[in-house]
Image (cartoon, rainbow, N blue to C red; front, side):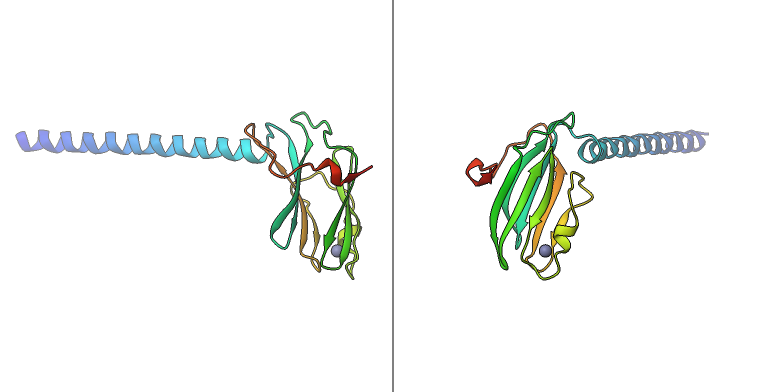
Length: 151
Ligand SMILES: [Zn+2]
């Protein structure tokens, strides 16, 4: 009699444990999903642009605010790449490679971007112009350096 009670108790504890673990797993899933959603789909402070050259960030600036309004100064920045000067242009919260002396000009043909999934890449010069969502705690690291922006 006692043995059956103990068995029943144990199975009840086990069921409780399983339920708690399931609930915890569910909570973890929801939290991960929320973070994923916040970081990838709902910009909280807007979009920023990053220009990376040979793995180094050479320019960074806020492109659009949280409502998608353009906040970057319209104009161009003139930079020095391995194939010579290249020009990155900003207009209406969008960015493009205006001029590059690379042999294939694929980067120039990419045109304007304002989409995180569509970076402008110059393979010969190892330049990546990318756009990404930024969180509320966004602090600008590198610019925009207004001296480098030529209207
Ligand atoms: Zn190129």
